[in-house]
Image: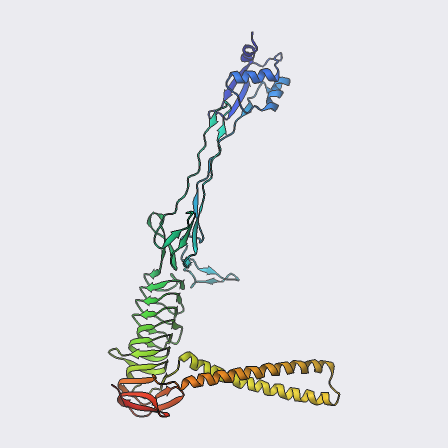
Length: 468
């Protein structure tokens, strides 16, 4: 009897279905059984087992077979294939659709107005990167056969609008300023306009967008809309804050109740403003009325619609204020200021107040220094007072310089107030008493109503002429 035949009498060889393990099972438990390690390995080879021998188990069966009589023993172990991982697109932003989730502030408080987390990007900003797929690693069966692996599949950008890839096609960038949006078939886009179909309320929250914002509804009190482009509201604005680097257009008008403000880097256009605070670097264009509001324009304030009324509050313009009706029959106090940019007029007031405060502080400093100088002259100045004297001297020098700078700037602004050549106030229909007109540094109070008149500066005074 050959060795193989002898071992065949006692042993049964089995392999798993995936060919990754091979086992030996004794069919006869005989204390007289004996074999060597080499004989056992050769027996396994005769049964097609050629790879992954577990030497410790084979050696154990050869040396002390009785320990293995009543159990199945794994004697060879293959290597399973390692499949590659698929590539994927890694976004620079969290693109999970949790757009309407309130923001948690420090201390655990929730800001229910901060819910719209827009994915803003600037031109040239990274949107997403491609993570490469990894190759697989082949396995080996106990039979010596190679077990094939699967390589990972590469991911590819699905290009939408206003996005570009780098030369290696491994990264995606914004071609314009705008909002990242994933559309049908997972296309990646950057859109220059963010649209809200409804009111800006607690559902939408505050908006801060790098492009143009279009709101097809109202902006409610307490909310804020900020845009690097234009803001267009197809509705009304309550006591909200609207800030735009471009223009602001409100089709329904502003009813602010003294809350919030509108600030535009270009123009503001709306049907009416009531109890509002509006400023524009260029023009404010109103079709109906401005009532009891603070309005500032770098160039012109035009109110010439069917009503074209300005009454109450203060209206400031760099060049011109034009309205059909100014004031009312009740002589409601109405202030119109032209001839200097509103921000310069505000700066002039601030500078004058600051100069008054600086002079008052300088006076206190000089009095304290005079007292310390007297003590020093008679040799009674203590060391701590000496340090105070040095400090006060430094404070005085800084105050003198700051006062001089403020005076220079005040003179510069006052000089610009003299340049009133283009400044005028026009009343197309009528201007009523109670109106105060300021052109540059000159003021005129209107006591009696006048029809179709224009006001401008000439020969050291504000003169009234027929409107043409």
